[in-house]
Length: 244
Image 1 (cartoon, rainbow, N blue to C red):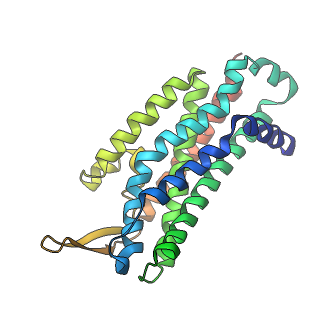
Image 2: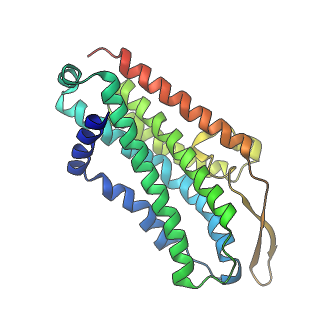
């Protein structure tokens, strides 16, 4: 397991995967801002799921495609299977991919805290909603990552995974403006129904928005984790049974 992960880390250095992991928090820092410092954290945690619904399906497709595309382009799959077991190869890629997702989410949430410090948010830091948002973001990202990795294993081509990621981002964004029941059928946009903030009041005259907490969606979060586990198992079976 350790040797497989080390080998994947060496490949990742040549692919410059770290740049992708850094791109998302940079986009968050440049994009996010607050006009009303008194409710800035609420506004940020309300907006982050929408931004994630746009970015993350595409980013997860990029990570998954780059993780397996090197073997496909180099036609090294058969050689790899003679050097290490399929279980070891899959474990190394799954661990590295999950680690990159975890790093990305951690940096994104850290940038959210940094924004509060730099811009001088006066709203009290909402620790519990912040942690909940981070957990939900990680769960959905991991689920999307294994769905894209499964597509890469099925087609041995990054194009289907990237197309699904792009289309998923568009559908996920549209689902944010649909009834909540509809959004439950759009996994790419699960960031939005898992959000713990909603607009409770908008003053049209002053353009002032008031945000309110809504109940945590533990049921959807649990379903997302189960779906991620199912996609993980499907990806492993695909690699285990795949002929080369």
